[in-house]
Image (cartoon, rainbow, N blue to C red; front, top):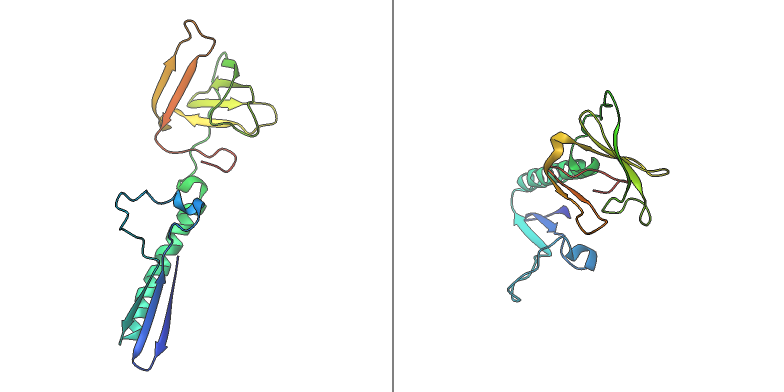
Length: 166
C-alpha cells in the first residue's frame, strides 16, 4: 500500500503498510482463510542503523509499485491486439444474438459477424466486441435440439476490454 522512512539519532525506521481485507470490496481480492487463527499483517516496522540501506529498499519498493500500477493502468494489463481484418467475399453473420456478460444496460440483441482473423459482435448504440481467433483457447457450440437457445461459448487465452471492463 505505502512505505515511509523516518530518521532518528540511532538510524532509521521504515514503516510498510499492506493492503488488507478491511472492506467487502477488498475482501474479494483475498482468498478466504481456512484457519481462523491466521491473520493478515496490516503494517510492519523495520529499524536499521544504516539509513542509506533503508532508503535503497524504499526506492526499490516504490519502483515495484510503479511497475505494478503501470501494468494495471494499461487496458486489462495487456497490450492491445491487432485490429480485425474485414472478410473478403460474402459476409457470414448470425443475427439476434445476446452476449454475456451483458454489454451496457440490459439484454441487447446484436449481430455476430465472422471477419478474416476473428469475430465482431455489434449492436446499434453499443461499442463492438472483437475476439481474435488467436485469442480463443476453446470454442464450444451447443446446437438447439428442443430449445430456442444455441450456445456459442469462447474460452479466451487473455481477457478482453469491453466498456473499460475486463
